[in-house]
Length: 324
Image (cartoon, rainbow, N blue to C red; front, side):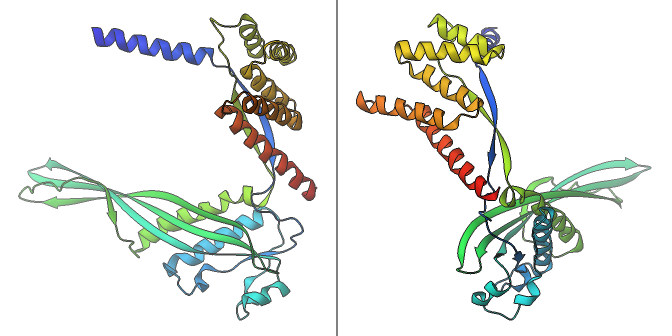
C-alpha cells in the first residue's frame, strides 16, 4: 500500500513538473555539413578499389549507395573510371571533390527461437532465426586541387530478416537452447549478403544534410519558476502558452530591465530567435555573460550553451549566403 502511494506521489510530481514546463520551437536553416561552395563536380572512388578492402562482395554496394545519395541532390557526378590509373594529385584535372572510404566492419547477430510440438505421435521442432546485420563504414570528402579534407563521416546501418523451418523427429528430442544476440563472424552466404545489401542501401538516405542546406526545428524550454515566484514571470509564461509572444516579450523585457533576472534575459533571447533576430539574441546573452564575469560568478551553463548554439547558427547563415 505504501509503495502504491509513493508511486502515485512521484507520478503526480512528474506530471506537475511537465505541466509547468513551457517550450518554444523555431526553425533554423543550416548550410550543408560539407562546404561545397564553388564545387562543380564530385565523384566517389569505388570502395572496391581500396587496397586494404575488406568485404569485397559488399564494397560495390556501398559505392552504389553513395553515388545514389549524390545523384539525389542533382550534383554533377563524374565517373571515377577516368581516375582509375591516375595518382590522387592528378584528380584535380577531372573533378573538384572526391569521396573515398572503406567498410569498417560487418557484424552479424542471430536470434534463434525454437519450440516443439507433438503431432500424431511425432515430435516436430519449429525453429525461427532472425538475423541482424550491421554494416559500419567511414568516408571522407576531399578537395582534389589541394587534398583538403572537407568532411569525415562514420556511419552504421542495421537490417534484419527472419527465416523459419520445421524438423520432424521421432522419438522426441530435447529442444535446442534459445539464443539471443549471439555475435557471429561475417558470413558470405547469400542470405547474409542480401541483408547487408539492404542495410547498405540506406546510406544514400543519410547524405542529404552533407550535400544540401537543411532545416532543423529547435526547441527551447523557458527558464524561471512559473509558480510560487515572481508573478510577472508566471504571467509571461502564461502568455507564451497562449502564443501571445509579443506580450510575453514586453513582459520579459520589463522584468529584465527592472531586476536583471538571468532567466528573463534568457527567455528574451529565445523569443528573439523565434523572431529570427539571432544577432540581437547573441548580443543579449553576451551581455549576461559579461555581467556574470563582473560579479565574479561563472556563466550559467544554459547561457553558455545557447551562446555556442547561436554562434553556430550565425556562422552557418554566412555560409548559406555563399550558396545563394
